[in-house]
Image 1 (cartoon, rainbow, N blue to C red):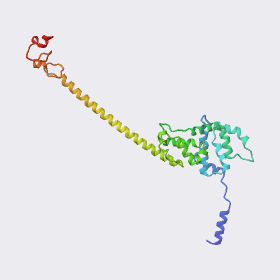
Image 2: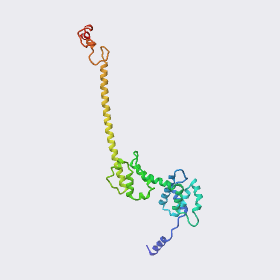
Image 3: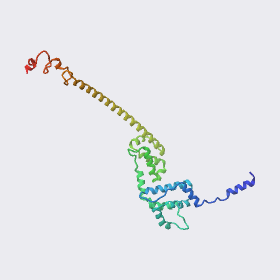
Image 4: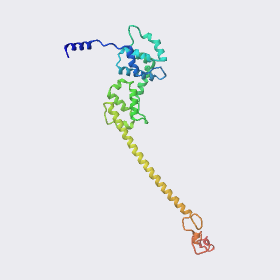
Length: 272
C-alpha cells in the first residue's frame, strides 16, 4: 500500500460517523417485536414489561437518550393516557427525561414500593413444597430473587438461601457440605432428589411384589376351598353335601354311623 493510500484510509477512519436517525433506531427496535403495555390489575405485568424493554435496549446497545423515546410509544390505552397527563411535569426542552428517571416514575405508578416489599418477603420465606421438584423450586427462587439483588449478588449468600429453602429430606443430606456458590448446591440437590426418587421407587416395587404374592396365595387358597366345597357337594348316591363316605350307600345308620343293625336295634339309641 502506498503512502497516499494509507493516508486516505486513515482520513476515512478518522472522519466522524453519521449519527443514526430516530427512524433507524425505531426500525431496529421494531424488528424485536417489543411488547405493549396497557395497564392492568396485576402489578407484575408492569415489572415484566419494563424488564423486557431493558433486555431489548441492552441487546441493541442503544444510548440512554433513545430509550425513553422508544418506550413511550409502547404505552397504550390507560397507560398512554397516564403518560400524557404527567409528562409535562417531568419534561422540558432543555433536559430530556433519563431512563432511570422514567423507571422511577413508571414504578411509582404501576409497581409501587409496597408491592416490591411483598415480593422481597415472598423470596425470603420461599420454601420447597412437597409437590415441588428441585428444578421448579430453583425457577421460583430465581424468579423472586430479582427483588433482592443485594442478596443474589453474593454467591455464598445465594447458595445459603437456596439451601435453607429446600425440603427437609433433601436439606438434611446437604448439611455435611459447605457450598460457596449457587451452582454447586443446585447440582447436589438435584442429585440427592434423584437418589431419593430411586430409593422410593425400589421400595414401591418391593411392596407391589409382596402384594402380588399375597394375592396369588389368597387366590390359591380360595381355589382349594372352592375345589373342596365342590367335592363335598357331589354325591351321586344320596345327592346330599358331605365330606365322608356316603352312609346311605354303605347301609349305615345315620345316628351312630355303624352298619350291621337296623334303626330300631341301634345300641346308641337304646342307651339314650
